[in-house]
Image (cartoon, rainbow, N blue to C red; front, side, top):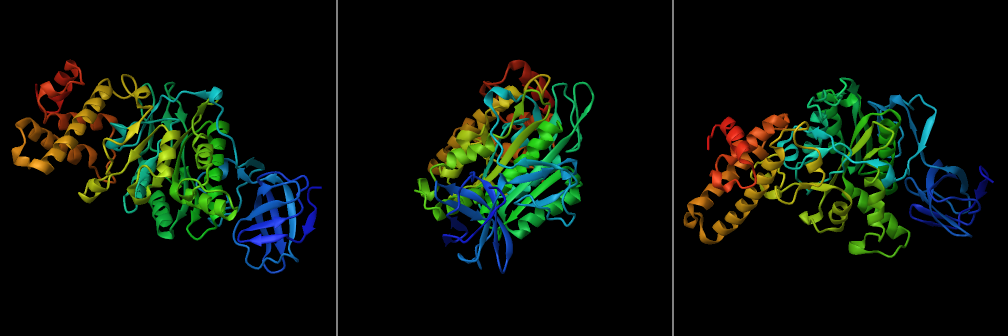
Length: 479
């Protein structure tokens, strides 16, 4: 029967307790464990058989006694209370209020485990989101409903870039009008569409959490942000629950309230480390680098909750952030994330050391949905050609720089030297911009043409001649 308390535990293994009572118990069911000293602790069922159930405690099991503890199966999965009062609130990783204002006033609760969106119910993402960052808008465009992760490394400015995107993100619809920063968008019919941000931090240090909160508050966007914070000293299981709470809130706002939601999750590496730790405690057979064999499907259960669905005008766009161990893009976490998501923004350590911000690597970065959200009526007619030419030219720059490191720059041909000059100009005027510099898409594309003006016209094979004549002239160079 539900609600009956069982006395005694069979075993206690770290944060996992084993109980012999498993009748009518469901996977992921919430459990209350009582002891004499600490009182009530919550957990969830993580494994079970016909004779026993394994319960992961939200916290540690210090002070639990196998003989004196009592277990109550609550008969429901973990749920998050949702309502219009979510906006502007700060929660911990378990979805409990952490800002001192108490629970939101609502009777609606949703299962945090959720489900990936049914592929048949999806609608294809096509609408352009302007982040104000040239390296993203111009060459790795973010589309509404897309999941586009940032691959970073320890010490790189991914936190600053994420905060900048939250401050500056705007919705650009097919009519060419833009939204007000993070508080509304103008639709083709001229009506305002809500645009909000869900920010989820997993396993971050206190100073990192404080940086984001201060930035949101000082820029005035906190009232349109829902924050879920699981700090570094929080239990591992809380890191696993935090993104699910964040995505549940996002689904409510997107599909129930028809808002456009941007979900920023950092750091997915901390999430995966917590998953590996819990898997080890449960005695599961490890796979690559000790991570569980179901790492791919577990990450997919998070990433695939982004998108647009039929029957709702809302959408969920995801920007997960992960720090690659040892800057290794072939590590299981970025490797599997790249398979699931629709591209990636890769931050480059060499660019960062040269003072380029944001240090977005030109060649490893890509957005697979970019082609469907740019062009006439969405950004500008020359966007696709210009982006393709910038990629091609910057690829040539990499080859010339490798050659120069072998034979010396003075031995290069005049054409190769022009590519070197283009590379420097591209990095300094296109990639590099201040943290407070918010560039619209027109400004970004004009800067791209300025960088290309360093190359002779016969090298611009990926752009149409009419675009060269029109936009190169505006850039100050007539061909």
